[in-house]
Structure formats: structure tokens, C-alpha cells
Amino acid sequence: MQHRMRIFSGSSNPGLVDRICGDLGVTPGKVKLTKFKSGESYVHYEESIRNLDVFIVQSLSHPINEHFVELLVMIDAAKRASARTVNVVIPYYGYARQERKAAPREPISAKMVADVLTTAGASRVVTIELHAAAIQGFFNIPVDHLTTLDLIADYLRSKNIKDPVVVSPDAGRAKLAEKLANRLDSPVAIMLKKRPSHNEAMITHVIGEVEGRTPIIMEDLIDTGSTILKVVEGLKERNAKDPIVCATHGVFSDGALQRLDHPSISEVVITDSIALPEDHSERFTVLPVAPMLARAIHIILEGGSLATLFSDSGI
Image 1 (cartoon, rainbow, N blue to C red):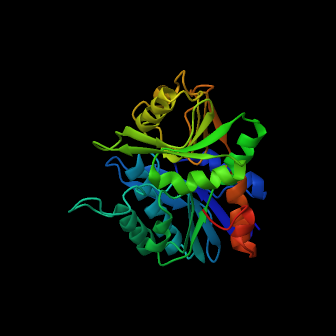
Image 2: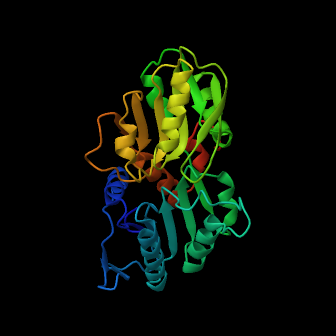
Image 3: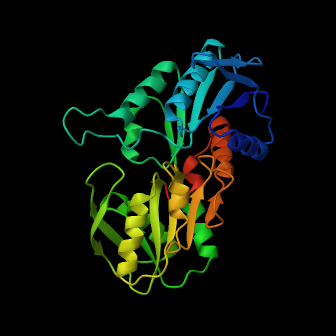
């Protein structure tokens, strides 16, 4: 496989690329990533990629704008180096929360990111747990949308949780929570909330029975953690046990790691789609996405259906 493809890492999560390459039995591609004094990104592929299938792995995590521009420069350099295909693996797709206009004169930034990636020369996008699945339709190139539901469900089943209830923090995550509940054979509860401003939430109602049960809060991402704490407080007020918080993407900005190291949270389960600081609390459990991404890359190269990676055909 190595002679037909190369996998290169951006600067956002090089450890993930090492693990993907280890699963595939290949070595990471050699690329030089530096910055000029002015802050401009510079990329130089240090080996020939002519007529090869190139995979560039870059999560759009903090600092998101630097990582995004670096990814664009990597795509452009690969295209100009005559790569046969330029496949962009974006475990965490930044700007996904801006997928629609919620008020007049707002951008649809998720669409803008899709347009720019395509214009830069991406042939395909592979991503995990988009904030809104409809973002796939923003692209005119193939998009492989992977899910971590099976990964998280397998881990939760191994814990033999007594009286679980899967909790959706809002109506928008209800479908995701329902799919996890089906895998766990568990009931579902939905929190209804209103947002006075960005990254703030107020719980107004809870639909479903949570008293005396162990809540499993299911989110696609955790940013500041403020909303999660509001959900936890709302559950505790209704006499639920200490919840388990689950999410695919740990964005963890603005002191979120310290905020989530909370005595009323029994565990925080996330994946390594975004590199987690090594000084995180033992309360955090990190599940690996490298095996899933490695299998996806193998299928893309060799043929087959990505649906075989999951217990159902989509999220």
C-alpha cells in the first residue's frame, strides 16, 4: 500500500497520524511545516508524491484559523506536486456549528469552509461526527462521514452501567442520543434549553424519566463545558445519579478541562479526534479513532463499503 499512497500530518494532531500509519503498516510521509516571521504558513513535501494518493490529516482545532490555512497550503502544495488525488481527513470539522443562518446578516461558515477546501484542490473529505449531517451536501466532492457511536457504545457496554438513560442535551442532539440508546437498549431523555448567548444555556424542561438512573449525556462536541454543567445541574435537581458525559470531539476551550473535572460528573468519555493535553484529569477517558480512520483509508484505496465499519449505514 505504501508505494501507492502517502499519509501526511498537519500540525494539529501528529500523534493521531502515527497511530493511523501504525494500524496500516506504513510510515508517515515526510513534510516540512514551518512559519515565516510574519506568521505565514510554509509547506514542503520532502519526498515525491507524483501520481500518488495523498491523505492529509488535520483537525480544525485550536488555533483553528492557523490549522485551516495550513491545511489549505498543504492541499495546494500536494496538487502542484502532481498528486493523483488529495484526500483530506478532517477528524474534527471546525466551523460546523455555523451551518445555517440563525439571524439576519450571519454567514454560513460551514459552507464557506467546504467551498474553500474544494477550490484549493481537495479530491475527497473524510470526517467524523459532523455537528449537522447536512454539511455533507455543502460539498461537490465525495464526503465520507464516519461515526463514533459504535466505539462509544462498546465502551459503555463494557462498564455494565445499572439503570442507564441516554440524555440529549437539546432537541438537536435527540437523534444522536436515540441511536446510542438503541445500541445500549436504554431509554432516552431530552433536555430543553434556551440560549441567552453563545456558549450559554438555561435548562427549561426535561422530557423523560431520569430519577434514580445513571444519565449518559451524549454530545457531538464539548467546547467550554458550560452547557454540559447546566445539564448536569438540571439532572441532579431531578435526583439523577452522577452522569457520564460522552462526546466525540473534545474542543475544550476557555478552561473546559478544569470545569468538567466536577464532583457531580462520574466520567468524561471522548475520542482523540482532537489532541488532548497530557495534564488532563483521570476523570477523562479517551477512546482511539485511529483504527476506524485506518480502515476507512484502506477501503477508499482498495474498494468496498464504508458502511461495513458501523452497525447501521449512517448517523
